Each structure stands twice: as structure tokens, then as C-alpha cells.
Amino acid sequence: MSEVPAHITALRKSDDLRRRLDVDWLDAQKQQELRAYWLEIWAQVPYGEPFHTDNLQRLQRCVPLAQGTTRQRRLDHTVNTLALVWDPADPEFVFVSLSHAFPPLLWIKADAQAQAVLDAVAPYLVEAKPLPQLSRSARVVKMLDVPDRGVIERTLENLELWLDDTMWASAFDDDPWLDVQGPLSMVQQTIWRKDVAEEHSGRFPSISCRTLWSKSNLRIEQHPFGMWVFDLRYDPATDADVIALVNEISPGHLPLDLPVDLAASLLRDANLGDVYVSDCRARGQIVDAAAMECALAPGETRSHAALLAALAAKRDDPAALDAIADLALAYRYDAVLFEMTNHTAGTDLGDWLLTYLAPTGGQ
Image (cartoon, rainbow, N blue to C red; front, side, top):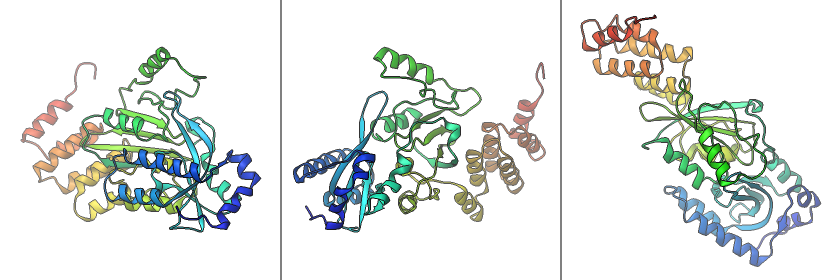
């Protein structure tokens, strides 16, 4: 194990770190034990290559310095512990891990002064708060080949331990678990899980949860055609370098003020957003662009306009018209379907549209 330089060991003298982060500095034996534990956990995490190996290499060379503040899941009571780490490949800085399962490449980075460390972790030491108080939001689309939402839910619950395991479905605008006080018995957990699994008939099925540290909100919506929307709500953090790395690992344009404990759940597959929509248009993939617009902004005028633009461009393409009709149906843009009748008269699609759009009793 590499020898930790003096400017790092000097942090042991900081009363502020000891008081505000409840740090317990580790001796050499405990450092080795903690690193061995992290390596054991990382070996069980199914990330792809080369990401898994790059994180493994950082774990193998790093030196855990101290452990401090903890956060506990509300149902299975898994404890996540903040840890200060030194990486000999980046020796002038201190890094902060938020969980024994957290990807090391996403550790928080801070200058090796006590106040700098405290400033860096401040966005992650907040108490639970209602969703409307979160000041920032973003949406990205992932194209995931999974059979149902349960696969994603199990991944969040079993692997991404920096997320709370109190989840809820689309019937709830905010975290329904906020008012739960104290530990729940197994019977109480079963009742609550059943109640919060209710879906809203007018919304796409979804699963939501909160991060344990920054208390950000992650909602994952199941959209048509293999699109999964990750709706992100958060207060800004100061880890732009880490988020820039995430944008390289999982191609996309995530906001650079995103907290790392939210970004850590976005590492699998690309994070597609407005830039991808523009790229689709530039390549002439106007139907794909419309689909992305609908997922990113369902019910908004920009999605309606994108569907009309696709219709105008592809009015002589039967396959494209079928796809546009499917999108308009899925996202309830009946005005687009009415417009389509002007371009599909005498076709099977046109006959179906006239039948579908015909008034029924009570209308």
C-alpha cells in the first residue's frame, strides 16, 4: 500500500472534520480490511468493460483514510458510510465515497484541506425534504432491452445501495414514505409496499425513489417502443468533473451540476436528450426525433410540433406513417391523428383512423 503524503495525513488534526463528519481515522490494518471489503463487493457488481476494470484498478491502489457519517435505508436497513480516500494516481486530492457499492470513478473530489472537503460533501449531507423543494430537473431517455420494470426495480434495490429502498409508483407525485416514522415490521412493510405500488391510469407506469445522501428524486418511466425515461430532480452539487466523466462513460449530456449519487444510477447505456434529438434531425431520422421528443416532453407543444413535422416529411412513406400513428396514439395526440386522415384516405391506416376517431355514444 502506498505511503500517504504529509499534506493528506495532516487532515487528521482537523476538529471540524471530526465534529461535522464524525470521522474515525483508520490505522493500517483497518485500511487494508476496508479496501479488501470494497474489492469483495465490487467483484459482485455487474458493470461492463472497461468500466468495471477501471474502477477495480482504482480500488486496488487507493488508501481508505477514514469513515464517518452514515445513511441507512429505511426498509432493509443497509448502512452506507461516508469514507475519505487517497488515490496515489491523483495524490494532491482527497476523495469521498458515499457507499461500499459506489463506483470509485464517481467518488467526490476535494482539495486536501478540511474546509474544502466539507464544502465538497455539503450537498450530500441534507435531510429528507418534500419533492417540490428540489430546484433542478432533467429528463433523459435510455433504450433498454428489459422485459418489464421489475428488472430495473430489482437492480436499484439490490445493487445501487446509495438509493433508498422505499419506492413508489406513478399514482404519487411525492415520496409517500416521508411521513413514516420509525422502523416498520414485516407486516407493515408489506402493507405499505402494496399501497405505494398503485399506478395512475393517466400516466406511464413508473418507479420512483430517493438518493440517501443528496435526497435527489429518481423516477423511471416505462414508455412505448423500448424507451425508458429517467426523470431527475435535484439540488445542484459541485462535481462537474465527475459528471463530465459520466457523460463519457454513458454518452449523453447530463447537467454538470448533477449530484454524484444521482449520476451513479445513470451509468448503464446512453443518456439521450435534446442533443440526440438534434442529431436525429440532422441525419434525417425525423420519426426517431419525434419519438424522443414525445418521451422527453409528453403532452407539450414541442412534441406535438415534432409529430406534425414528421407527418409532413413522411406523408408518402407508409411505414413511417404507421410509426407516427403509433406515437400519436401512445402519447394521446388525437389532433395529429385527425391531420393524418388527410394523407391516408383510401388506405388501411386511413380507414382505421376514421373508425378510431369516429364519435361514439356520449361524445
